[in-house]
Length: 244
Image (cartoon, rainbow, N blue to C red; front, side, top):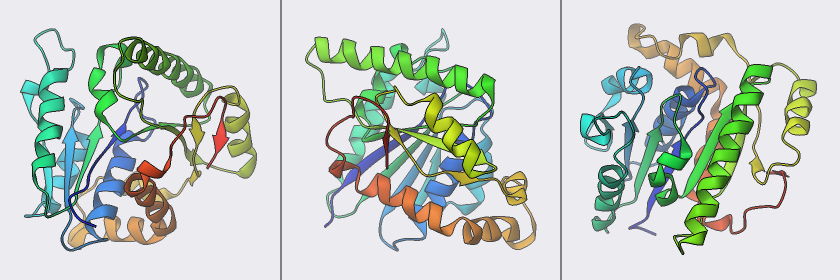
């Protein structure tokens, strides 16, 4: 089936939780699944970690976008500009388009109405107290955005998936699941820690670091990309945490 446009956002107000790492896995994972689909990564992070690292892989199917016009003078996202850019991809009906948005730390969902035009929102976090606390605040703000949107008869909110990052053990995974047990969101698979993630953004000879990372995380990357491709099958946001 061709002509599909899907948008995934990696978001959290907390920095260092793995948004850029997951954007890298999603982008390259999608690019290696099909020889025809087009993948675009929109980097809204001023640090430009994902875009700087992925530019060397760009070609006629895989592109990286950084645009100062995606922000207003006050530093808030230019929601209209971002939304119009995403919707422009819907005019290409003979191919599938996948758009990945790497959002910056400190992003405020209430000021980011473009979130509502995505197909799925991924919220990565680690098990540290600081990350868990910040993530809960972010999820509360995201829920506020959804409520305000529904009150104004806006589009249906996209599904939200919490992604446990750099987990060391099953006990840590269970600890995170307990911490979010009352949150109306989905709970994804754990991405277990590997030293390879420290080298994910280096430009090593022949990109051996990226090849090794993709091989080691192949099962996880397949699951993650499948979740984006089939996000339309996630119909109802749960009333409390639901394990995928």
